[in-house]
Image (cartoon, rainbow, N blue to C red):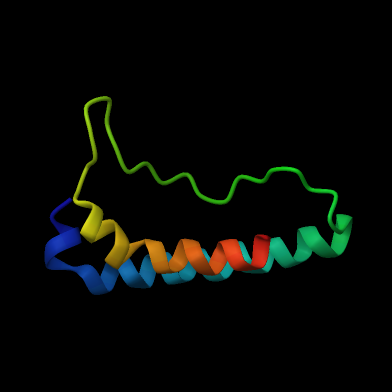
Length: 76
């Protein structure tokens, strides 16, 4: 969790790579089956516990949300 504060560049690099891989896979899925996909698993990242979030909403918006938006645009 300290990396979210100390090594934000690393978090961005990891999620950029994951986003590029996910987008490439989404393109392949769409090519193979068109618009017949009802649901798809895009990321296994867990952002919370049974009692609340692992970090602030602001940190999520800064470190993760831009990547999820890019994946969603292609998947929509």
